[in-house]
Length: 76
Image (cartoon, rainbow, N blue to C red):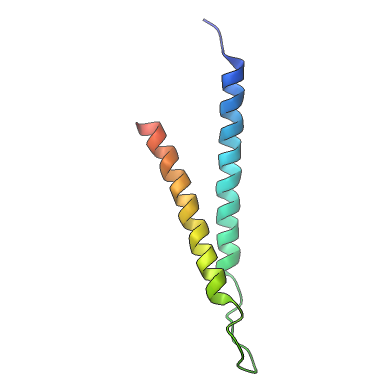
């Protein structure tokens, strides 16, 4: 019985890439949710807060889908 080192290395690379991707998506979501309130003294515009929040929600959804797919692969 031997170890298939090439497959093991491929799995390690994919796992590391998935972990980095999920961490970056959650970090971007935190940055998006911590955007300024959008209040301006002159009352012009909302400062792009709605766009930042939408991007943050999309990042969290994407991270959740990646985690859910990983759990599906483990349990299936």
